[in-house]
Length: 257
Image 1 (tube, rainbow, N blue to C red):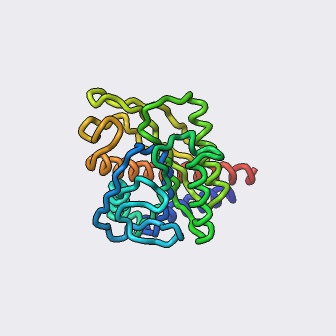
Image 2: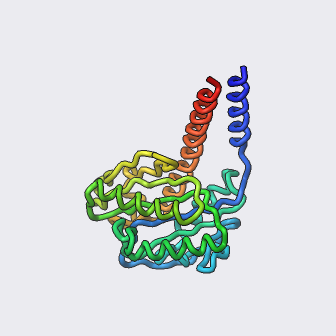
Image 3: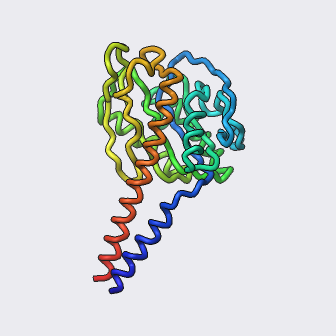
């Protein structure tokens, strides 16, 4: 009887947790690769969408990031707007970290992107910023790295984040290769969710109409990317609750024996 009551309590807690309540979201974005050349464009801001500057203060997100060499706001602004319009967030503050011309290998200890990430995390800790989501924005890359080494590089970067700041869920984009626009891009690596790491968007289905060139998304592509990331966050919330529910029910069953 006691075990039944405990399981019921678990279900009640999770049900209450799933009631949609808009909140202030903080999102850390790690951008694997950017083109060597990039153009910074300032866009009209979106109400409720912010970014952290180099002092860890919230400023309106309009394009050009303190921690990202090539952030022009074309992806973050529609992404933040979707999170707010859906009722998931009352405000969204991004900390996008990226280094022009970097690749996944640059996020390892001693790499240029690693150094920038550590600086960003120190500011986040000093300001006591807790991230609701950490997004690995895998690059649309024109090279191939052996699968195991690619996984290893991502795992090291995410471990560094986990050890050096407060973060909840990690969501990882599937990387794809640059291809001729006449052919659909292919998934370069798959990622299996594990330990609060969840699948991000799959870009392999995007057609040529979403690309400005072989490797860069156009305005429509950035809006589509924002939509796909919103779906990935929704899926991570559902999957995370399922795993939590199964773990708690299993735990209560064990201790009630």
